[in-house]
Image 1 (spheres, each protein chain N blue to C red):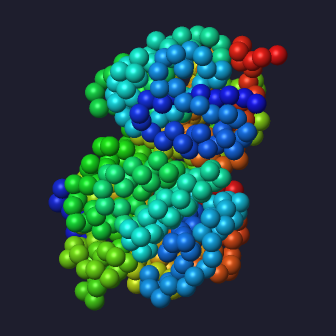
Image 2: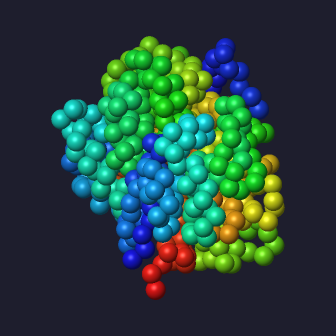
Image 3: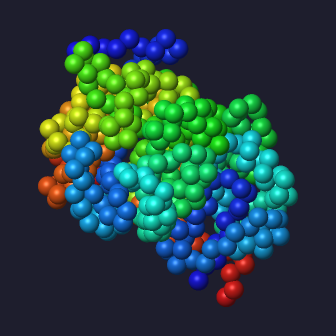
Length: 214
Length: 269
């Protein structure tokens, strides 16, 4: 049985993510310090809330270095929504704030341009590159599947090769998912995206971790 | 139709276009431990077990679910939290919970139990700063403000609380715009005089707000057919809340979506 560690940094709804993994048969535990992150087999950085609060809480709990080290370990790591934003270098949310710097790029507010902000609802997932998303956590997800989004800020990866999934919102092409090695960031909420989302979390549970016991 | 004057603080900008599929949201009125349904929010009939119905609507393809504790008594509070917890363990779409929420602590308890958004009305009318406090604590995306309206003989709409029983004295349009200025992330427009009647939505009021506020608007009250839903969808609302037609098994979420798609309204299949 896969073991999933959810980073607890005092923000957001950890339980929704935990419920989805429990439903999929995984064992879930929480990491509120750096040691629990370091020993994780596979890690989830969830989050609902503001970027600055997120970084402040990760810093005060001494989790920042452990997260960077984990990202370099080759073990499966996902960030969801704010948890995905925190993977980037910096964000414009209520002033400029430094992030974890795991994925090069920045987070900026979605420009209005005739669309409502926040972007709320189910939107269609499209591959960012010409080749689809084979080999990623979306390998079992048909192109054009819908996922549930709720966000006002969007990530802009500096390296186009890191962009995995996009979603069209009015005139905007929004980053829906990014991937660098075993690190994947989801802008949408796979834990709230019905069966399509559960399939992605299932792929995460099945992704090889160097800590897997043969 | 009389279009109310816009609130002075926030003049309407260019119309906002719905750029994602219309959200179809089954609304479940709860009088613990039962799912109930009334007409114009009164004369409640017991329908059955809320969790079972929630599960059925999830399987039918609902985009989101809404629980409204219509008694909102302290007596029923723990059973509502238990229901939210039980639902969140097995239903993996967003869940909005409303009814009797008075404080940041109440919101925290519901979010911890597994709600994704909370819906406020009475407490927000009594103390509008609660909207801002909730939005800055939890993010505006989880703060839904319910605007209960009754159309007045002079063609304006007044805002009500307590299922249309208490008059707030507020103009519904002004109050809705103010709620958005204070940090509401979504508006639920409940037309009390249409609710449970299956006679169609209050198109005039929904039209005033659907494309003129920069946050999502969910129309509620009056859905009796797919045509009714298509009518209000074509005004640009972001979601529709439906109850009677589902609870009384007149249609399913899947059938409704099929009809909507047939009449050109984009929905998630």
